[in-house]
Image (cartoon, helix red, strand yellow):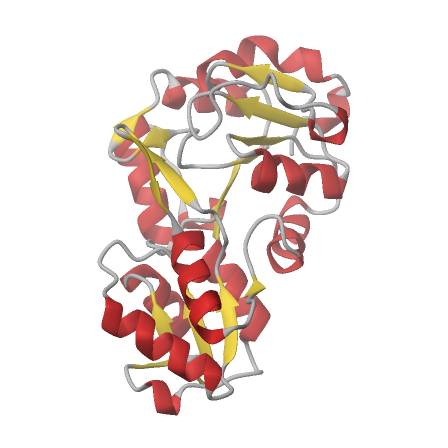
Length: 260
């Protein structure tokens, strides 16, 4: 079971009602749980800690894959020094992956952009200058928004769009549904079938479509109405929240997908 975090298990610091019990029931039913998020603000350890704190489900770091980790996979051995637009979770993941972090745009081999809720003009300016000077340009993800209890707020993709416009260059993207993240997820799943649970058709569901995996859309996050989805965009199951999933998982069919 490949499950998103923001908008699926919680909104900001508020858990989705019943999320923890749903995860426990799915695990008891034989599903291995893998949490895959485009949010780069936390390390895998910190993301697992947040899942446990808010939902009560005792997630572990090895159950989490984030777009920061996918970025390391994309860049490892190819660059030495990164200028980061992002929060400490992204910087720490890059450093742990052997990529130095610099505050000097002139020294950067790559500009890495993640969600940064404290971004200022000077940092965005320097990132744009580095890209124009020849630094590689990588986005952890291009989600334009992320969901909060108050509604959708600017996400990483909004910052990426600023830099792309200023530098006249489009980025490489590491997170869902792009190849770097999909390769990590395939490896974690181990080649077997998997269900993908998420709130974004363009990231979560698209990753499932590209991998040929059944998709579950929850209406508790970015997407509140599935009425506009059809064709390849139409998921196999639409539910109000993950709390409904244990009682409806059989609607997705092959029992062989259990344990994924």
